[in-house]
Image 1 (cartoon, rainbow, N blue to C red):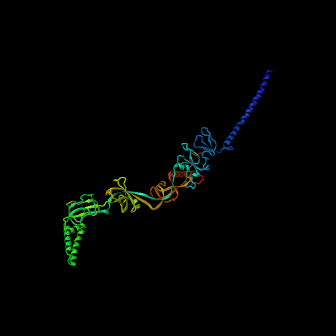
Image 2: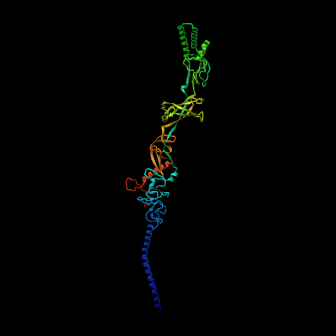
Image 3: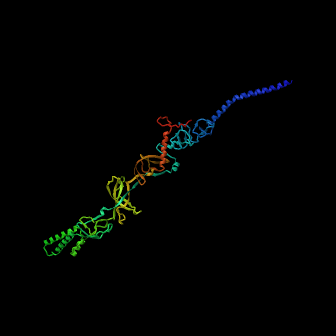
Length: 498
């Protein structure tokens, strides 16, 4: 009886265990399909934005490496790639075919190296230091492909300065060295037309100042004494023939005039002839006087010496006006004109200036120094300028006969073979333009071609803007082709892997 009761109890338990096992088996069979369905739903939810959510553009490496994926994935450490939503970052898909645009900046053309290296990428990436590549937008290239577009904030940071192209009178200073010399037109050499002996010297030292008519020396000349006696006799005979015939008086007058002319030809002064007539006596010696005002530069006369006719005894110079002979470089000679003003300074008088005018431009150029001589006439009333002094000469030379079109020298970008300027077109647009320049003076260049009056050019930070332009031109060379044209250079970096 007991056994029947135990069997009755075990049968329901076995049935329950069997039903549970059957239910668990069915449940385990359906679980993988349910898990797959849930995973698919999650993937769809991740890729398909809900209402009001942003669209996922691509997925980037969670460690910041330059690796991207169009679908969710994991890295080697099992970390999920991070989604990049529309409106975040650079708003660009990692494809070269259809780069997205950023609001207000236009379409993104490519990404350039943040350190300025000639490396570009069609997709966002980082360099070896972890720095993001910088996007280059369509509007950054200028409206017509010829201008450089720079934001106004960047223009202010660069310290860009603008100046107008205008007409102005240009002049530059030609500097030269020279020496002070005596004015050759104010030099006098004192000599006699007869021979004799120096009996006494009144001016007996080089450098002495003399005045016109001042006694220089007293000389004895036998021929002069005889000529004075002849004139005195002829003059006395003429005075005593008051009652003589007309012919006799005329003959006596001719003899007296001939004797007088002989004395005058020997440069005997009128006052000495008058003295001879008044006194009626012939003096043993004759006083010779200075022919001009000046300074004795040379003196060969020595008291007691014998001199010959024509022998120079004194060299006298009038130094109230002097010459400065300037050595001007050959390339500057064409800018110098006669009567042009000049400023002279000498080391002897620091801070003092002397004004003069160009008097003559010599017709030859030195083969050794390639310089030409220019003569400057300088007033020297106080005679501070002395022959032989070194002088510094500054000549102001005007360029052209009328105002010329000019730009500041800081506006010119000179590469050696070409000259260019940056023309301001407003709103951060700058146009590089080649120009043809003329003379350079007063920190300005004459503009002969390439600019018009009234245009505005960059005078500060223009080299930075030009470098930016050259950098962008280099980037264009490495920009990947988007139209399939085989003639367009393409450089896809090896690291840009999808």
